[in-house]
Image (cartoon, rainbow, N blue to C red):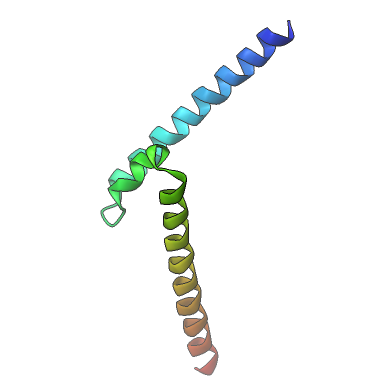
Length: 77
């Protein structure tokens, strides 16, 4: 009985994950500035994922700096 429940739960989780991946793929394709190579992330090696994660950290830091600059400009005005 336990084995059957584990199998059913795992099957449901796999279906959910697949659906989420397909939805994300569609969003990536729909956004012109998105990098289409991200669609195949599940095929990347751990090293490639680490490099990509660092790229996103840099992007996030740049975005945070720009936001802080904009907020600083608003306070001066």
